[in-house]
Length: 287
Length: 156
Ligand SMILES: Cc1cc2nc3c(=O)[nH]c(=O)nc-3n(C[C@H](O)[C@H](O)[C@H](O)COP(=O)(O)OP(=O)(O)OC[C@H]3O[C@@H](n4cnc5c(N)ncnc54)[C@H](O)[C@@H]3O)c2cc1C
Ligand code: FES
Ligand code: FES
Figure 1: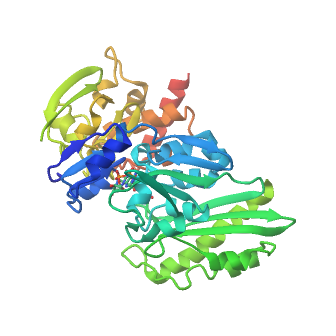
Figure 2: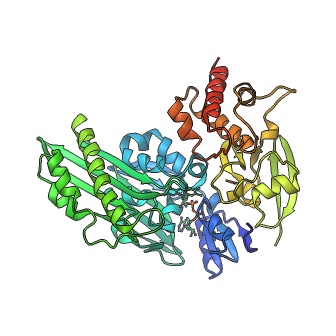
Figure 3: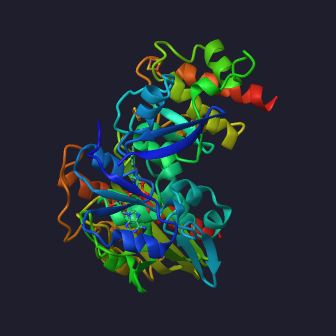
């Protein structure tokens, strides 16, 4: 399969990248793990491909106070294997490790994955549960968007045409917090049929904080505030978890495709929400 | 517009003018003449085209040759040295880790990285580590045995 012809450009600074992207025929490329398959299928046919590989400073992982700041060009493999990420934000490392296969994780980036916004991608569930902040730059300025506002619909985000994701910030996990990402995968591609990310803090035997992020079920990832509201303040028993997980698919227009019907996906979402919550609570209690 | 690229492949520098849309696998096989890396699916699923770029296993059907400009590539042809097979190659031979051999160049490149990152992998770690490589013949059993044997040999 051969892509339509294009010019290949390699800016060496963000300013140069913005200049090159100020052209309706140009498309930015990070790892190319989504863009190249799209170009081979001619679902994308950019006239110019602007590769960010030589733009410095986009793949740093830094601790900054209570936040972990991750450059947009950080690869999935870097996120799953960097000790700082594994210790300070295990949920993100776990989501990164769940992506596709090692060849894809060696090349694909977090910025590329969230810009692409595949409804079955893994990071969105974790970033919703982490209430991540996404730093977006344009020529002459930048803005920060919360994960819940960033992911809008299938392959649709808050990004404007001349904007680039430069950084993703997530909180360092507190001592009493446990997290888990549970995914039912589609065996051929590795993408999530549903994926649930849960974070739970326990205080005095009670759930003091809970966040649940969902991917694969609807057109976009989302935070299941209804599940959270039912669980917070409870003891986090199996019965409490079951009651809370039961509402995860409520009000969601579930996807239906050859891999899973809408009804089956909603069922999986309830089962995997319960699993993710149980694992997160067990980890929080073990801290 | 064609672009000039310079790539070090198995220790030798190559310079060519290529169309940006030329995939790395097509560049390696058709321009450089290295037909070790195979094309199984051309859709980034099967792993037969796996080569190492700057020390990392990648699927060369999911990368354009222009992206490899200035980088170091290792293909299956570059593994043996002084007429001696690489321990992973030797182990695939000894443990019957192949039947038709179509997936083998990719399997070996992926296995080599797996052992470099994790010198004594468990069976489950081997199976997970080779998720990106499909084999239609062996049922994977002998491939797993070969990786175990290679890891033992390389650790020794
Ligand atoms: C075989 C295979 C299996 C996979 N399995 C999974 C899986 O199980 N789970 C999963 O989540 N993903 C999976 N993926 C997708 C993978 O995670 C990709 O790496 C990711 O979706 C895209 O990241 P990239 O860096 O390769 O981006 P690219 O492909 O380079 O870009 C993707 C899109 O994002 C835009 N973009 C890139 N960087 C930026 C930026 N900094 N700012 C703004 N826009 C940007 C591009 O213009 C393009 O539209 C799989 C891919 C393959 C090939
Ligand atoms: S030919 Fe590249 S993954 Fe199948
Ligand atoms: S040995 Fe035939 S495909 Fe693997």
